[in-house]
Length: 272
Ligand SMILES: Nc1ncnc2c1ncn2[C@@H]1O[C@H](COP(=O)(O)OP(=O)(O)OP(=O)(O)O)[C@@H](O)[C@H]1O
Ligand SMILES: [Mg+2]
Image (cartoon, rainbow, N blue to C red; front, side, top):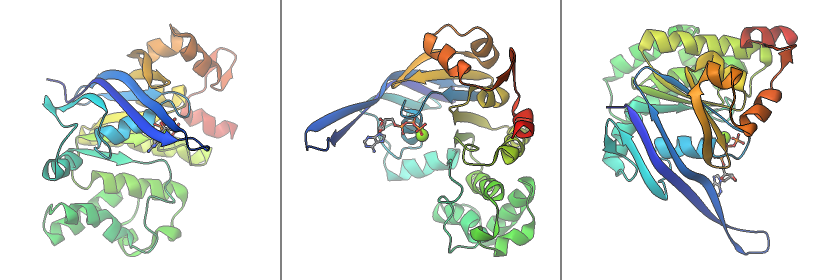
């Protein structure tokens, strides 16, 4: 049984135009994919193609208009409160912007322990222990517990967001453009950290990005999305070297290259 299976999921938003006319936005249109345990699946596509909408349905911030989302074979797309709490223990998300995702008036220790507190996970002593352990695991010091977000750089904040996401021992980590807001020199460090964590903790990743090369670096398979649909899916290497879809070819053309060689993320930093 697959860890996560998305079956023919559609999400329609109803909004109004500037003139007040009712408008339908088909953010996802019949999306199907599977995520096996331990796999890292990349999702690429340009702005507005529905990547974050897909993430929000998986962690149940919204419900699909139609279709099913199966976690270990059980449909979670219309889960109720108690079940949602269970889902959030298993599936966590790291967002793009490390500046707005950490609340400025809370100490790092409380930021890390909060989700586990709300879910009633572990005793207070255990939560503290786990928070300290995770800080070290993401390359920060335990003393960060008593400091505030503004005392940290963008890269360090993203490390803190990653540590927070790991507090409840999730199986699946959704990474929604986790390095796009960071300086190029810091991006590679955070990507390397994510690679290490995946191995150490046997995590499963859904890695969202508009950069195909970054996705290939971190993902075994890649799905290419365009206007709410998956237009191509396969091993990341194959997609990058033998793209079948014209849209994938366009995405690849937009990636920095020297001659015919793709620049791996740890070299992107050198190019500044
Ligand atoms: N809550 C909402 N209400 C109305 N429309 C929405 C809502 N959320 C997303 N959309 C629309 O759905 C489409 C997909 O948006 P989404 O945020 O999933 O794209 P994305 O691929 O994550 O883009 P980006 O790369 O810019 O983050 C867009 O047209 C967006 O305007
Ligand atoms: Mg998005």
